[in-house]
Image 1 (cartoon, rainbow, N blue to C red):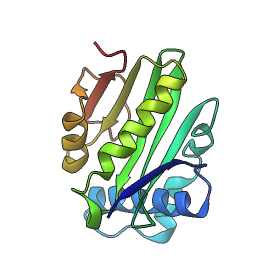
Image 2 (spheres, rainbow, N blue to C red):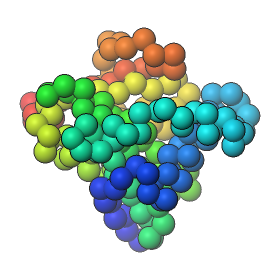
Image 3 (cartoon, helix red, strand yellow):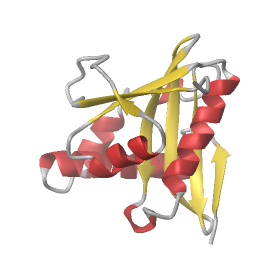
Image 4 (tube, rainbow, N blue to C red):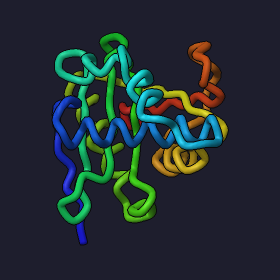
Length: 161
């Protein structure tokens, strides 16, 4: 059983399904009820997905036993800074290493752009994500935005220091 991580456009069928499932999970957890298809559609409308391609970003898909099971995105903020976004691992394969592998792939993509630091924000209830970031060298940081759902902010230096 192995993971295969590939760079992929965020609008391919597999990537689109992963992004929908990501939004379904985060919205359902936030509202403490299943998100409707309409809510998922609305949440994905104008969500900046077009930035997840070169030269403004990147997107990766992780496949576990050939099935699309994880994803992560990167948006270039400036020549030295990027934002990590849309990190998702299907619940049934969490703990198998896929989260770390999609993070590594996104970090490699960032380094190829010359990015020196990655930042992100997340919510209190996304405890699995928060644990994943800490495990892979991200550190809690002061707030770098005032987004509605941002409750924790992280950063990672990619220069090796």
